[in-house]
Image (cartoon, rainbow, N blue to C red; front, side, top):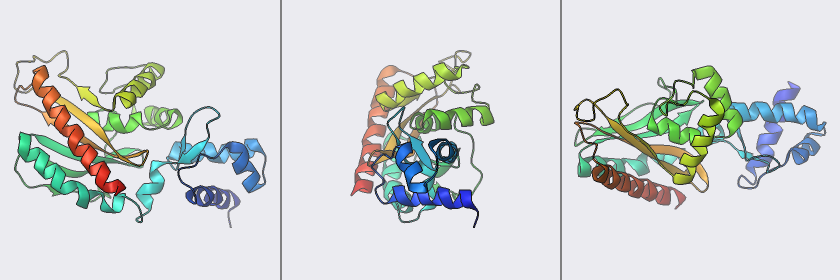
Length: 252
């Protein structure tokens, strides 16, 4: 048996017994019977891969989003079935484009898509994902990832070309924390676009939570020149209501 893989498995198995309880590095080192630096190397890799989530300096670690995407005995198994009626109702109610997105290995993966009263398309999660930085739903997902994970994706996916228009990582991550606190992302038409141009678009997204963890983002894209603040506020409110309903049903 390859020792480092066995140790990583031991950490994940130990933490899965109480997934909501943060574990400190010292506790995990003692579990493995190795030094703190040796344990830190394993934990840091698990964080970068998304299997663990770092809560902050000296606050410990919990399971990350990749664990839930691999385990069928979790909310992802029921997410599409639960969300579909609400996504359909939302799209028909306000006649706009609605999408349900989850993280898949550090990429953005659409699970549901609907435009107005057209048929919902349901994509296979094993299909081709896209990077997270370029859109509102991806930005919501990034706002719930720890700094090490976001930094790794920033470096591998060209994060400086992001939807927020911030090319400095420290400034970008700080803004993600503001957006996480707000519980929403609103991207208005780019400066080079004429707001009156029907091709100019605004996008927004809100998180869907299972307990304290983000497991998906619900996104909306406005088009046809809809940019007035009152309309955006109303649509965003509807989006929040739908996401909250889906979260409530998931938490059962």
